[in-house]
Length: 448
Image (cartoon, rainbow, N blue to C red; front, top):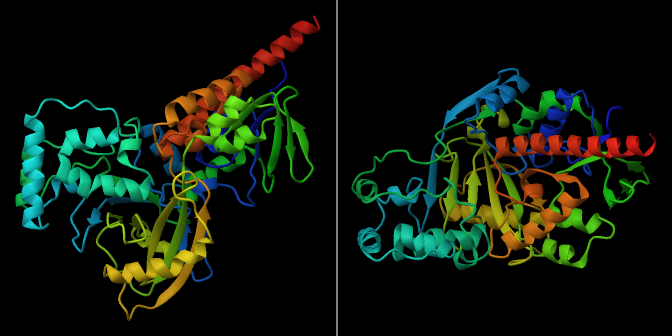
């Protein structure tokens, strides 16, 4: 049987996970990307000023030894291993993360009310959990839930906790017991209970270097914007005029975009794809002439009058991300087509970000800003609203029927971390190989 023609749409972590799996089967896939560079959201850019930024915050904290070894080998064992430090900002206070076990230092009346509500919720009849808001109230009591996670939800997920499911939680929001809450309220020293304790990051070149040794495994075709897919003839048409075919198709293209490009997609599937919610993001990258900007690698901001929901400090991931003696800040300002549409340009948010960095004391008036850049991410985080599950089932069932193997955060339409995206690509490659084998087998039987 001839080698199948497997096409991969997208050259991010999931796309190269698929290429890696196909390589193990002796298949060289053709990989298409609309961008002039590979990497997707795994890409990194170094500006003329010498500051390097990834496309959004990226660190690797997988506990899977196989993925750890693959990534380490891709950077020739040159990576930083860092004990993570996370904190929060709320009304001028800087408590550690996760906040529910680091209440120490907050106003006394807030601490008393949080603990009182926490105890009362534990003594009350068990609450029925229909959505994320119910889960927060059952886990923390009303005061904490409304002051902190419900407020952050509106900034980060752009909708209310009442409109979100709990499908995304996993280990992401820690549910403490009473002793942990009390200890964190009485003492500045509390045990580290966050799901991330240490992370790895390439020493040179940014996060995208984790892809370096996977790049030769695919035949890359950059600057190829896909216009349409004809699933009957298995034909792909690109904006530059290229028309090509496939035996098996792996796609990490965001589902709403993918469905829109499929010729003959049924109206109910198109409508379902439109109900899938995702945040968009203005990412503002700031370079500063000092490195003592923050003790934390990332900070979460609850106040709704602060424009950004989260900050990262890339110079703390690797000192080679900045010129010597400098520091860097990456701010995330979130929007959503469904709940809070983005208007204008990403550059419009540079000055508001700098203003709020000064308001909260991270930037000083005398600081020299050496670099200021912004980028707009059309797709950022999946929003697990109450429409998601049914809409996703409709879309995925249709793609399964077509034999299109979806993968990655925007193909799975899930909250996938780096290692999960890579493995999602591997799994999609296996499905594409099986589909191609079935098609080749059917063709062979026709001519027998």
